Image 1 (tube, rainbow, N blue to C red):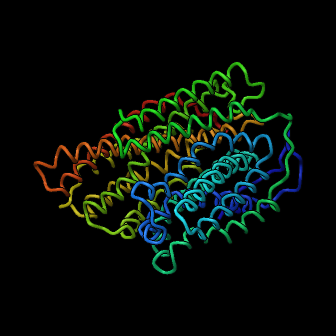
Image 2: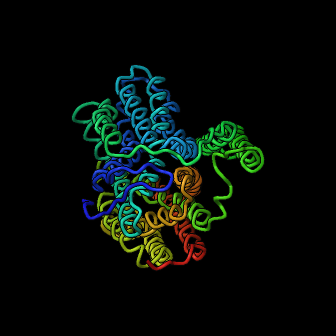
Image 3: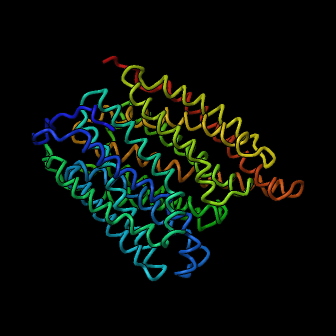
Length: 479
């Protein structure tokens, strides 16, 4: 699908080697990104079967999902710096190995504890894979238009992974067993490991640096504690010690991390000078906000389809398929247009799609049905995500200094993931509070619909903020 992309030999601080076919390199990074995103959602449909077989507690079952998401977001910054220090080829291969081995353990697990541990390990592998794929794109696709198209394909592959999660999870669980939700990764991972080793060039960093261990520990622990606390807010109040404690500890650790990076680390894991680059700073903030907008779309429209319209999980996944396909097509088009238009027009157009789509979706109720209440607005929102996500990823990483591409990729990917985690907790709280307030005057289904409508209005507000902040993106440089 990408034979038209041009790749050039790695230069500068990277060893020269024969050109690898562009389509092989692009297929590798897209397949890796597909696996990372797929495993964020594929287990959701399988959870009842997992519970029956392994006997989870009510709260423990959620950690089959949360264990992956927590370590994925918490370790991505470390994964990005590893890609800079050890090279994307090695980092991607190790990440794929960890991910595939953990998938095998998860598929063979006979206890709840073993499965959760496997999911945690999967998240660590994914945290190495995601930023490494961004480094590969920046290193192999050096011509502006080729890089933009590569980002479009990379973004679209994530969309395919998100779309395929519910459908593949339902099909594998129904046709075979929940264990194949994990075991399917093993042969795919083996192929990708071989592809990474044979198709990517071994690189040598320009400067030999030791890993910033204190920064790695405080940064990773801070992010993990913050996200852990936010995740627990959906089951406990924000003032509960089970929520406020981890959040407070996480924020304190992140303050310590910032001080370490600014004053004590000889070779910081996240050089603060990177935030003086406008694209990195503004792009990271916007991707944080976009994480909340995206979770409102994919997660809460799925809940609306199930809780309000009465769809099964598999039917809900199929109901979101038109939006997912639209996202993929628009993401490819936006990435191809970026070198010609610049980031600002695409992001502003995307925000118009968000405002129109979420405004329409906020009027949805049980009487409206799928075609009028969900399909139309989700297509508009999908257009918005397709226009903004690859654009912001490209804009945020375009000016990354050589040798820092991995950590910049880790930073912006972490921002988007953290935005989704925080957004999920905040929006779920808003939906729950609104539903409770509406229960006395409405049926349970109508109360739930009112809660989800509130979520969609908040998402429209976030989109408005996105549009305002987009004015701070770097001006377009014509090529």
